[in-house]
Every structure is written in C-alpha cells, then in structure tokens.
Image (cartoon, rainbow over all chains, first blue to last red; front, side, top):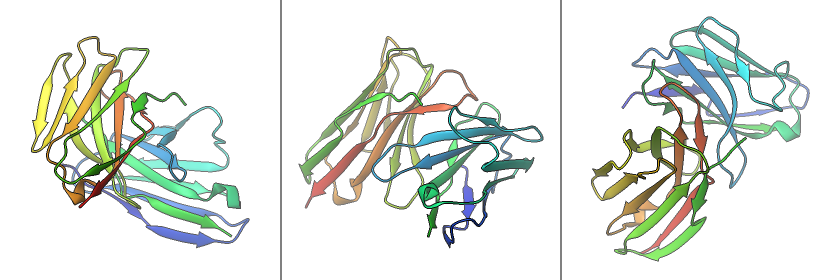
Length: 114
Length: 111
C-alpha cells in the first residue's frame, strides 16, 4: 500500500504557542488530504479536507482560523494549530488520497499542550 | 460528525477463537473499508469492499459488503495475540469522498 508520513510524531508545547504538523505522501501524489483528530478511546473525527492548490473545507465546529491547513503540493499538507490550548491536546492523523484511490493514513502526531 | 454504528464496542476472547464485528448505517455507502489501529499509530487498511454482496478475504480476515449497501461485517478466524487493537469500519459514498467512521471495536486476545 501507499505510504504517508507525519512529522513530528510527538510534540509538547506551551499554551499560546503555535505548532505545525506535516503530512507527506511518500510514493504517490495525494490530490486530496484529510485531517482527523482522535481523542482517547474515541473514533477519528474529520476536521477538514484539502485539495492541492485550493482552500481547505472545514467540518462544522472546526475553527478555520485556529487550524490552518496548507496543501501546497501533491505530496505535502501542513496543519498549524495556532495559539494552542490544553483542550487542543489530541492525536492528529492525516490521510492522503490519489484521485479516486483509497485513503492511506499517516502514523499520527500526539500533541500535548501544557 | 456522523458515525456508523459499530458493534460490539469491545471483545475479550481466548486465543484461537473466531471474532465477528459489524457496522450498520441508515444510509447507503458505495464503498466499505475496514481498518486496524494499534496504540499510538494511524489506522492501517485491512480490506476494501467496492460491490454490494462482495465477500473478500485477506489471510484470516474476511469481510462482506451487505447487499443493501447499509452494512458490513468483518470476521477474524483463529485469533492470535497480535490481533489485539482497535478495528474501525468506514463508509465512503463515492470514490474520492470523505470517510465516515464507526466507533471502533476494541479487541483483546488472551493467550
């Protein structure tokens, strides 16, 4: 299957700072990338969908000014959590999809905001 | 967001036993997917189903796409300790669209 990487795998930051998470498709071109958030013992909840070169589409209840998404190339999307607060602590997972292909998930990024 | 109804929520079984879990939806999906997630990792695709009535196997795993397109099940035969993890179903209305996930089934296997 196709490979998606995320960086960093873990990050701890102070409240009020911004954190950037990278998602890369290593062996395919991801025309669409999805960002999910997963709280402990819960399922994945879609935050936003991004297509290369266009603005991301955010799910209801997700603040676009707080979770900035950039999908500048067919192999890279970034999620920036701005002015992070403890309630933003979560497991963030991206997935990449090439055209009408299956979604392949990254390994996730554990964010802890102190 | 919307979730599929996945059951059971958790299972604690003896090594060697067979396992069955299922997902149901009130609406139609044209693709059903089954993923496994290990702690601290992203989901890994196990089986993808694209046609109503389709029955697909991957080693000890077998999944079926319900004929009504509103449900799917996953069976694991002769479970082993490394089967431990959380299994998620996901539905996709059309190719390229977002996935809708089930709540997950936490599987624990006693050696």
